[in-house]
Image (cartoon, rainbow, N blue to C red):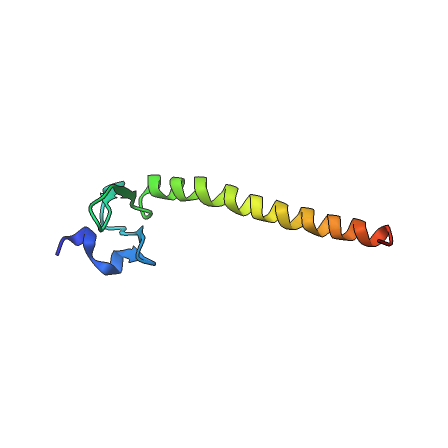
Length: 77
């Protein structure tokens, strides 16, 4: 078994995380494409680039829903 294909390095089966592997990208388990090593510096940057905007959008949507519900209650609708 290839070291990169070891199941203990795949979180949730799709995220490769291996601090001992210096590679920034590794082949996917199905050999179709590559995926970042999220333990590497570049992998952490990629994760932050995807995760932070997604969480920001979710929080903004919740805030907008909350403020629109509060505004509707204030109008007596």
